[in-house]
Length: 376
Image (tube, rainbow, N blue to C red; front, side):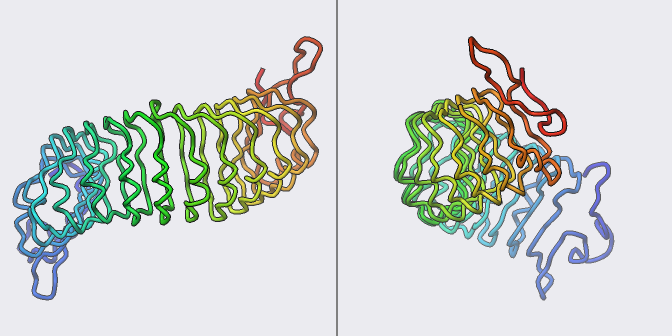
């Protein structure tokens, strides 16, 4: 149901169901799939949807369905993929029947509540689990870590407790997002055992403290994206991250990191985003950062960085954003960095020069020819 229902060719006509738009059948005209995502559907998902004897996948992603999730979906002996992402479902996640063949479950961006129950261990074949953007609470059940998960997204819930060390046993993981919860304690070093990890996100988790283990940089060799942001983590940026040759996105913003920027980060030749905004990082920008020729965003504002802008940053021909305001830098912007304004640098912000005691703090930079703005 729903006004503006888009994909409805042949629905509720005399045509066989296999000719209805979004319905998929096998050669014997048994329904094996339902895909009506982005269809402006409203109302509730009926119990009958789980009653098709051969149904393998269902996607109602990005609609306006409400009510509770039918238990029948989690009892199906044929369903391998359930995608209910971005609707208005409420209530708890149904219990999982024994030995269901489910491989993919996307129920993120709804209004689900309650706990993650241990019956999830019955979904022994599950590889991709997205429970993000709900209101789930309680601790993560340890049985979750007995599953051969490849993707796990628990972001933006109300989960509590510590991040269990057993997480490090799920060595099949390639994507892990556990931020936006109420976890306490530090990041367990055992996460370094997840050597297949390509994306690791811990964001908006202010009660996570401790340090970023240096072993992550040595062990997580397949990382492409790492986000550890909005926590109470302190200590230095580990120089070992400079050895992850395939890293493209590094976001350590809004923490309590301190110390100097490691020159070793200049070895990240594939890096496109370096975001260290809002920390307590000191020292100067390493000249080695001029080797980051793939870099598009260098975001260093609101730290305690001193010194001048290295002329070597003139080599960053792909740079689009350079934000240095909120520091204690000085000197004049190098001409070569200003020249980047003609080749894609659209945001370049520094501190306006000002006299502090007997010193001039801030960067001399013509606006708007060089810098796009300066902060007073």
